[in-house]
Length: 123
Image 1: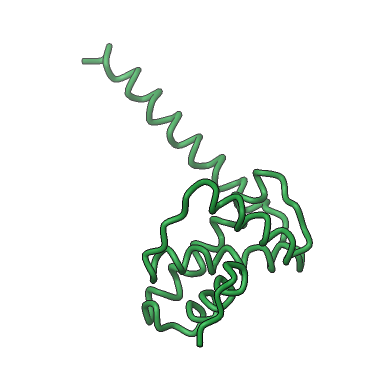
Image 2: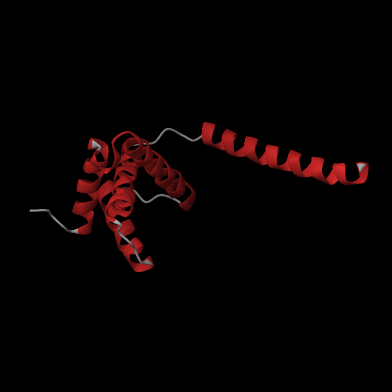
C-alpha cells in the first residue's frame, strides 16, 4: 500500500499548491480603476441578460458587445484583466440574485446597462 500512497500524496500536494496559487493571485489583484469598474458594470449586464432573460450570444455577438463595452468604458484590457473583471461581474450578479433573484435592484440596473449597449430601449 505504501507504493500507491506516494503518488496520491503528490497529487494532493499539487492540488493544494494550485489552490494556494489561485488564492494568492486573487489577493494580489490590483484594485480596479474607474474605467475597469465601468467595464465590469457592463459585463454585469451581459451576465444578467443571460441569467434572467435567457439571452444566448454567438461569438459574433460577444465580439460586438465587447467592442461596445470597450467604447463605453474607454478602456481596452489585456485578456487576463478582462477575465478578472468578467468573473467579478458574475460574482456581483450572482450575489445580488441570491437575495432577490432577477428582481434585485442591482440586477435590474445591470439589465438597463445591457439594454444600452445592445441598442434596445424598453418602452
